[in-house]
Amino acid sequence: MRNTYRAMAIAGILLLSGCNVDQQGKDSQLALVKTTNPKPIVTDGQRTPTWVEEIKREVSSLPELYDVAVVKGQEGTLVVYKVKHLHRFKMKQIEKDVTSFLEKKHPKEKFTVSSDYKIFLEAVRLDEKMKSPKFPKKKAEKRFKEIVKMTEDTK
Image (cartoon, rainbow, N blue to C red):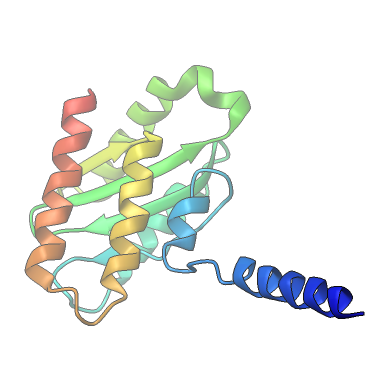
């Protein structure tokens, strides 16, 4: 009888400790597997301008894409997206189309466009960090510049 109670207690402890998974960064872990649909973010801490939300809506409406992240920095805007599986053969053409579409729509803005999963993941992580009130705006802008530099290095 004592062994039964011990076994039940050990099973309960294992069950409770298994449920104590770190929930921070959950979106970034699943960003490559599922659609995360992050909100557009602005690294200078101001309210998200409506035109940044409009960019996300317009790019998301393209049938070849299924997840879009938009990050607005002081010196430009980063647009990162995921391409549907059947359209992956046309990724370069899709990138050209998205870039030309954005430049025609917003000629004064400098855009960096990428379909790289790593860049998308970094944008989602930046979004998660910016949700914390302790994350300074200068650090967010610095991280934004690092992500843009990563996109230039991959090309």
